[in-house]
Amino acid sequence: MQEPSAADGSPSANAGNDTALNLPERPVAASPQKDPLPQMDTLPPFPQSRIPEPPAKKKPPKVPLWLLASVLFLVGLGMGVLVMRQRAYSQTIVVSVNGTTITRDDLFNQMQDTVGAQTVHKMIQNILQLQFAQKKGLAPTDADVEAEYAKMSKRPNFAQAMAQSGILPGDFKQSLRVQLAETNVITQGVTVTEADARNYYAAQSNPSNPAAQFYRPEEISLRAIATATQGQAQKALTELGAQTPFELVATTYSLDTSKSNGGLLAPLALGRSPLHSNPALEKSIFSMTVGSQIGPVFFARQWWIFRCQDKAPAMTIPYAQAQDQCLTGAKLAKGTALNSKRIQQEFTDFQHSSNLQAFWPQYQRVVAVH
Image (cartoon, rainbow, N blue to C red):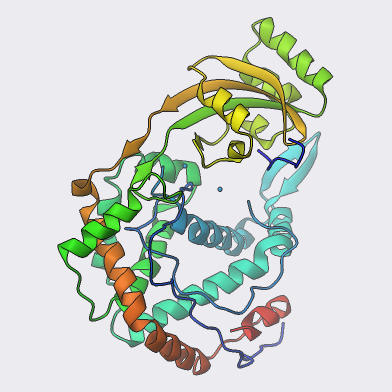
């Protein structure tokens, strides 16, 4: 769903540019919002470069509350893995459009043009971070990664989220390895108390915190049909009145990308979705019952028909279930305040001593910014 308008080949050595670790700020009052993939125990993003990533022609596109930090990492990682593996299957047909085929090679080339530079940049950064932790004797072991994965796999909806993301377990475990390395580096020599953990929980379960990790507002799942004109919306409404399945009508009439999934949108959270910019529409939608329908309504420059697929009440995760995550979050907050300056300098020195080479000319600039 769109946001509403106002009306509704030679090797290249690293060039010596500094890449700074962009550590989280001391207060950890907010945490990532949800996304298609699980994240490990409230970890903030791993320290990133302050140097802008190479520009892209397009930005890659935002499902349970504890899901966002890994999303950005895993989407990039998963994209990189797909790109780098594709050469083995270069002529496999991906889709056919009226007899014209799109092969894996076509897909690879397009992905290189749009997200190749960012993906390589992110992969380099992750490798440097793991090597940095290893040099300090703080790299997680395989057993550490497996233990964390086993713990996360017990969380509600974990299997569903993994299936929806399309990320393989091995790739997800690699993301956990990076996050564990981050935690080990940032929290070296740090201890926290039960009181610290409870204070962290209080901030992360506060309904007034729009990014609260342990509070999930009311959610609604919708199917939608979006058309450019009211006339097209009325035609879709007429077919729905004739008992044509909503999924089929959405596939036929809708302009929204959800048409490929029968009009099904990602769950919307009360006060945290694009609908929040239109209070009257948000109120109408969250007043719907399962199976009910509203529209056509004009929103974000299109005419919409919505049908309620499912609803979930607001929920607060009890402290007993979140205790381990709160201890980790509190430790990260304290470690960031105590260690960030020192780690920043150590990582910069490590980066300067690293040997980076680009064997594909189009990625020489990516190597240079490290």
